[in-house]
Amino acid sequence: MTNPHHQAEPDDGLLPRARALLTRTMTFYRDDPRTSRWLRERFERLEHPLRLAVTGRVKSGKSTLINALIGEPLAPTDAEERTQVNTLYRYGPEPRITVHTPHGAEQNIPVTTLDVGTIRDLQHWRPDEVSRLVIESPAPGLQAITLSETPGVSSSAVQETGRGALAQILSEADGLLYLTRHPHQTDVQFLHSVHELHVAQCAPINTILVLSRADETGSGGTEALPAADKIARRYRDDPRLRAFSQYVIPVVGLLGQAASSLTPDEVAALGKVAALPDENLEALLLSADRFARNEKPESVPRAVRLALFEKLGRFGLQRAVTAIRDGVGEPKKIVSTLLDDSRLNDLHEAVHQQFIERQDALRARSVLMALDMVLRANPRPGSHQLRAELERILASAHEWPELRLISALRSGQIRFGGALDEEAQQLLGGAGDDLRSRLGQASRTSDGTMAHVAGDALTRWRYHALDPGRDLVHREAARTVLRTCERLVRRTHSGT
Image 1 (cartoon, helix red, strand yellow):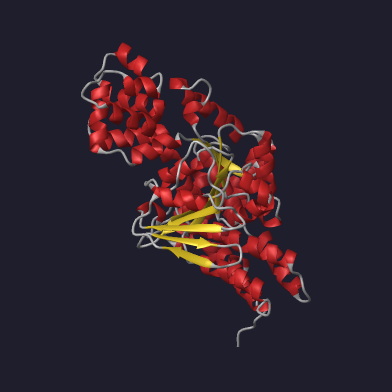
Image 2: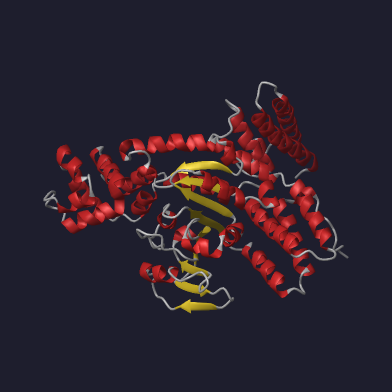
């Protein structure tokens, strides 16, 4: 008979241990309908795609970035802040909209297609009327992730419901994309408040800071992105931010959204614009009004020109024209070039590496966050045993330091120098989580050779962890790799 109080061994894997504790806690609180239902929802979410929350300051470009990530214009974009309720965009075989009220009721809105105007109207409802919108779409961009758009950090909706409600939404997300044009003290304070819970402090691995609207950095123009890159590097190394984020990425969301939906006719119109003399083009690009009202190019109607300016923005038009003049003529290549210029590909790569590749570590974090919240909010006789198991899991959760260090190495936040960076990433699981991938060995390598390779790595990283020539940050990072090597040595001896 299985002992119901059996404690999983540390090598069982973080997510299985977290799932087992969640099951025990659900059983423990089965006589509490509200807590039991909330825990059941967390359990069922383990079978769904990762949930990424997209939040930030008012008018930081959240909706635009969501559309760029999805590859379709689903999230309404307006000149003023409109999002009043949390809006979930997730994959579904057919278009569907569901409205959730604060009292637990659900209402399906009959739709055959997802109209931005309908979603915009629903987002205008007050938070005390609608607690959440769920938008289901067959868009391929939603197959691996679910995106949650929150009201702006300083919006009227957040002021009305309090930041605690927003923090609750963010705590339920597996990952967080925080958007700001330029990090301010209020951004740092808010992010620190989101990471105040004990589990969040143990696992500061779920946040990517996005410098949105990077094309507007400084005075804009051709120097905007280089300036945004400098700002990103400075904040990436800022101790206040590196405590919870390893990636700081400049993105031009409008261009990313536009490139994802650029049509052949629009590419053809851009080709005609690019054929204009430099002096005419520079004058046209000063404003949308000039671009649309000018007589030239006569072959591109004014309405088409205005639509291009609104879709691409001045920066996007300049990049498109430059690409065409440089010989990029095929529509697919132009789209690819503009996506590169928007830095959306950089964000996609970071999301894939930080979140999707190591999603078990993030899912475990979400489960343990939920358990921490329940055990703190609703203690009862006997819950101390669950709390003790939670603390044991947290103490042995080496997957989180591994993921954090992999991200820091990939982003350039941590540099050991030379081949050490590549070796560290491989040992940490950056090329695959299985034993042979971590040790860089082929499938036919003998167990004895594997043990020898692991032992050599252990010796090398023990030296780096104690190297007085390195600063404290890098010695701590080397100790993380050292602990990984110790685990790999144990695995080679156990045959796992």
